[in-house]
Image (cartoon, rainbow, N blue to C red):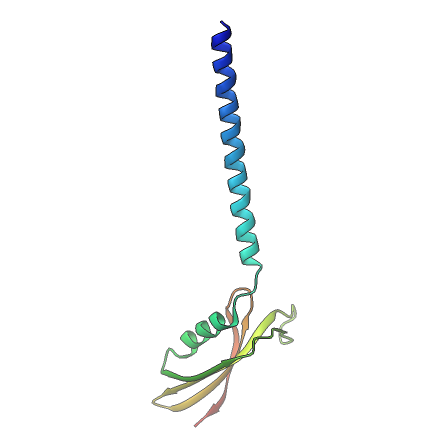
Length: 117
């Protein structure tokens, strides 16, 4: 009878250990996602996103981005953004855009044409 009792305790300990391990893995994964989501994207990756979006109707022939983020005053919540520019060449000529992209998502939140030649 004591042999069955020992097996029962071993099975419960194994189940409890597995449950604790699974919980730790889930908490670790959630923490990693939260940290990644709240970390600014690299300015170079944000620039590539802007070039892809603004260069859809032509060839990108030049681009730049300021690696220092700023508060964007045009919106009430003043998101942190990278400011940059993209020059696109197409049938209309050269179009120069300036843009603002969210530093956390890389999303292009504002852009405008500054020059056309």
